[in-house]
Image (cartoon, rainbow, N blue to C red; front, side, top):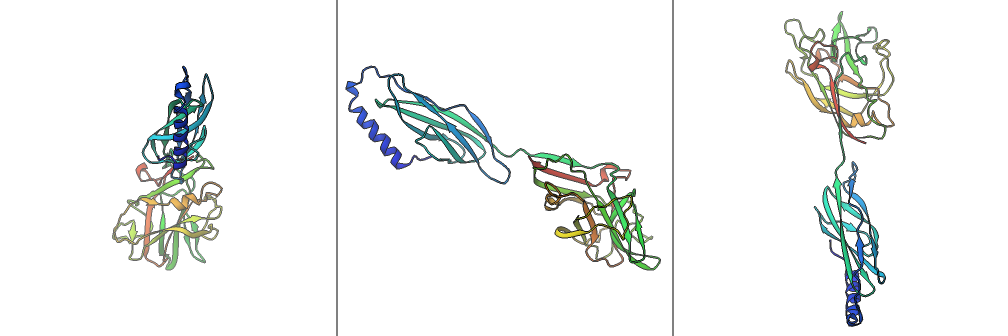
Length: 317
């Protein structure tokens, strides 16, 4: 940290003038500098740097303190001391690491005293919330068309598909919601990763000669945010809630019979569901609902708990 030139000049001039009078100074007591208590500050999420306040004092037993000078002794990077010549000043641009600052005080006879203070800068503190409930009541699979209107709450599979029933084309869609009640309203979401696991033996969405969780050549899937309230016990295809394409996640088509979706980035969707926003959950559907195509996953009621839908959220308060 380089001192401002005008401050250096003023301090040097003062010390020179007082040194010319040193023969007249008898038993002058040096002033005492107090740089304050060591402190720890934290960088807030999304800010990048921290600011600290340096609070110093000076005392002179046989005279007066006439000048103060703050400087940075060490640290992981250069900081900005807002007012080097004041006893109390802000210091900006602090990055993660340990800093040492020095306060020098000068008395009216030109004697100096120094003291140092350390400032520890920590990065944002993150909390990881892993949600993989069993028997989540907020899961449902719906299927139908203008004349077929069905739902599958309390089911062991969920997903997105386009198929036929009794010769009529139908769409199959999934809705699931995780409980965000433990996330503070003022939290900042750093990341959110959703994992869905292919159902090992799905009932829906495959031809009987071959068991597949994924079927068809056009099974690109969308993960969207639900924008309206819904009740899994009364949900049907005809009263399904609305969803939005804003920040939707596109899952590319696959010809693999089974393909777990691991750590899908749904950060922006979760941001849109937390804070002052309402959490209505995720909506699963095919991008093009053309039969025969499917993506079928296990729900929280499946016997193997490791295949339950999982959402991992990292946030800071």
